Length: 193
Length: 193
Image (cartoon, rainbow over all chains, first blue to last red; front, side, top):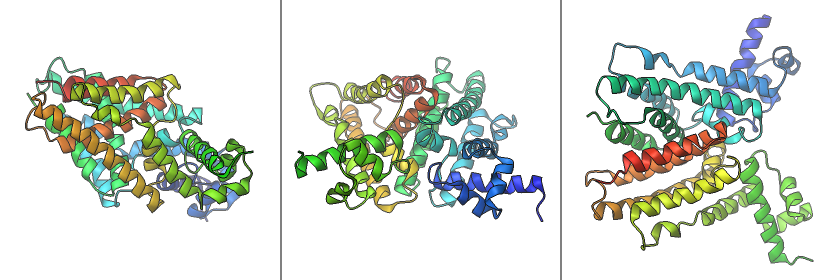
């Protein structure tokens, strides 16, 4: 028999997987408890609403992005940035171009309609952008990028381009848009001086 | 009393608006007929399914993008490309950073789950990319872009970046991501030689 803590973990994991695979509106609490293998009522012992479990899913997704790859200082900043997106694209390619990014998915589907989720998506984008910006700042300090490159705008732009590339890849069921992302970001936009 | 053709038009318009504002899964046929002010049964006189009305909505959205702005040859290719995205961003800003792009929204929410809609989203992206590519080819021929710029990858990348910028703008309820798009695409990526 599962303890209380492990039941919460089962539900949270199942919610994360359902939201990521199906989206917010297509996921019901009944889908989550069924996937978790727990009685329906037990959902409300751990989460007050579907929305709360969606916020937890966003946290879990954020933790899966391995941002520590961006800050490990043992390799070149732009190599770390490329490795970060290569890690993310590997998951996408191996899974047959489905699911995409949970932050972007909730941004597209839910942000207009739910203020709590919009704010969480915004925080997710802000933190992610700040991390990319930090890597660009290091690359600029190392003399690999033009001093006049606006790293704030560039970081936000790169993250936007990544989110859009995932959507295009899902529509095309191919890596074309992801390949175009790598070629353009690392071959043109951030080309070393 | 509305005639048959005008009823179809009312339903199609209402479906477009509902799908764009609410998304695919949050829109029911009952929402569409209510918004159109027609009896529920009349939906099926004109559309076989919600999916069919969503495909029609994608066509209507495509027609609203004013692609003719990209092909009018009376101005510089890169100015036309900028005017195209400025036209699209105006709508976004004026409406308080909601709704985004219907093609991208369906790509994020529906493409993994519905083959007909996925194929229509793919066609939409492909045609849009081809139009951007054509403008980049003209700019390259005019000597405004490097000859070695891969215009195929760049066109797909720009469209991806646009789609992602709309999602980030909706999450942030600000023009920051759209501003970063213009600054980076036209100030760095396509900076005239």
